[in-house]
Length: 289
Ligand code: DO4
Ligand code: MG
Image 1 (cartoon, rainbow, N blue to C red):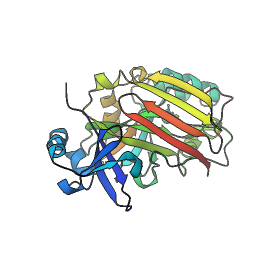
Image 2: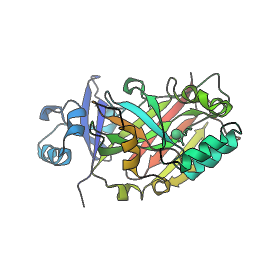
Image 3: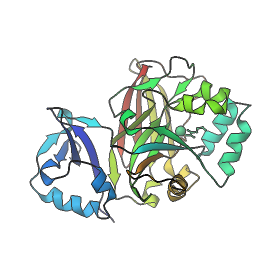
Image 4: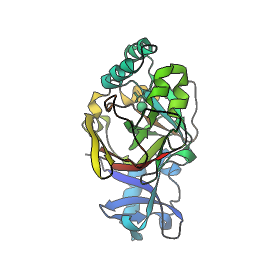
């Protein structure tokens, strides 16, 4: 069994951005005194886990999770997303739009996956921060997705949780509106941290759970399994890196397998919780943008 670690970005009490390793359910190790001030060199390194293992043996300052603010675990990477990778996503989208149904049907079966640009790193929302629903859309949903953290060579170096917020009425009206349905203020959340040291076979055993609370009551809960993703992770990463370089690496969301019923739309102040077993929880309130 390989070593596993949770690597995070956080703001300390003085508002300084730090890199940390999760020591236990309530404590982080601040890696600054070991010379680690960015995620990028670690994500590029071939032996990040053994480096971190050595560093964690040093007497590093500890901070409690309660006293810090976790940042989104991205620095300057572009965030991309794969679509229609679960059967559930294909059928939901075919029902959403007569106009685009055959496109979704074809892309699910096609050799080339659907990949689309999702966010610049600086626009990504961290756990605890609000995600957006568009004020010009009537049907808004979260999309809870496993996210692959890729280094500049396209190698999968870790996993995090992503929320590909989507306006289904805009997407359903015309596929050419997809960028407007998918990219707007607060449309992408990532976090709470990057899980290192997992194999694809292990990750495929994980469950993804979504719950949505309104005024303290659950208005939707759903579950799927990472194993339901139709394509191999390396296949998705391989297509993203075809004819395109990512000198700072990239994050790739792998598609949603949980779709709330067609009668459901998010409202301002709803609370979204996404759990991926093996990683943790990504939690965000909803705001109108
Ligand atoms: O083509 C529409 C987007 C699909 C998507 O985001 C998903 O399946 O998760
Ligand atoms: Mg999606």
